[in-house]
Image (cartoon, rainbow, N blue to C red; front, side):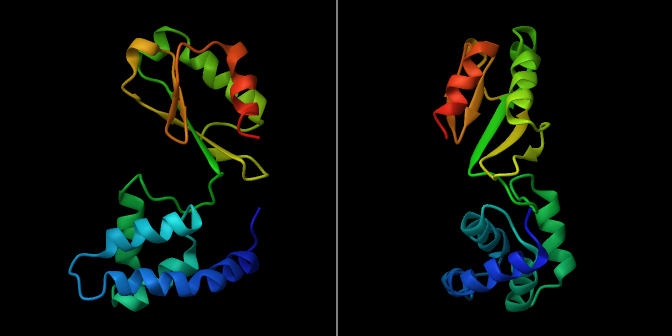
Length: 162
């Protein structure tokens, strides 16, 4: 778990890169979302010091920045793992055992959906539909889709990300 000191240190180490991002969008109206996306790519989430800095640099109230970040599901305020697992819980996946795949992921990772492993290796999320119903049940890891899953497949797939 990151302490407030380590979050501040990480921010300070990447402040020059944030400045580069800010220069890229300088003078462009409505650039807040683009800036937030690029900064999130830098940290894999949006640490509080970066949000305060962005608000100051763009002359936008911090409440407005938080309003955008909390409105759009693409933004994350907590550290995320290096590997993002999206386990489909849509209708086709549900009917074909998606809840068992999710339960197996939770068991093997030692976390519940919506959380990140202590080693920051995996973040487990659920999604309403991945759009791969013909391959259900499915999950994605870092955008790579795995289909027709059984509980027995999970350990082999996770091991390939170790």
